[in-house]
Length: 294
View 1 (cartoon, rainbow, N blue to C red):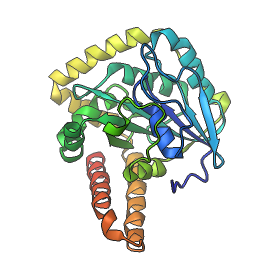
View 2 (view 1 turned 120 degrees about the vertical axis):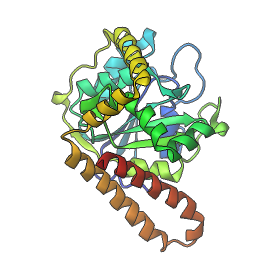
View 3 (view 1 turned 180 degrees about the vertical axis):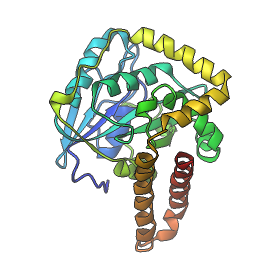
């Protein structure tokens, strides 16, 4: 993978069991460095797991939604955040019936409360999308806003403009420790998401207590928001109020990287083969920029 991670010490993926964190990391590194596949009853990742490759520390952590491992998961995530250095942090979530799960939002919220991470300091990967949902999220702004709004409205001070949609890969379904390169647009997304410097002493303990209550409250709030779309829209605008310059700067950086990719395309040996993916990438980032700039 041709990643521009020279200034990055750590790449950390956070998410609940079954979201596909380990598979993404293996695809990024190019070898089965992390266990992936089907696990019955609990997640395959049950402790803080790290692998160093090319001077970069790649890290996988267990998820807070596993009730039998919750405190250990909270300790593992805290340890991962205390490794010192520059981080690229990605939360990995999945949809259930076209909606972000309350437990995934609760995990994000718990971690973001514990670490000095701002809204533009991390990325969000919506993984394992069925073909219809993947297509709609890319082509229908209202659908994307509704799905992402369920996250932004519940964590307004930590809302991020760095979002990527990753389709389901049937070849990986149920397979154990299979390595398949990530789609180029996903690698580009990981590449362009900003890093953040984290010092160990600035990290608080990720809290496991009260997680179930938090999920219950989020489920009620999400239900209320879906019934009142105008309220959701208002809260989405509020989430980025006062952060226009910060968000626009982040999106402009992403557009600048896409511009460089576009220019470099013409230097490639077979540029025509890359055109469809390139056009899709530019269109997605442009769409996001228009939304956040409103």
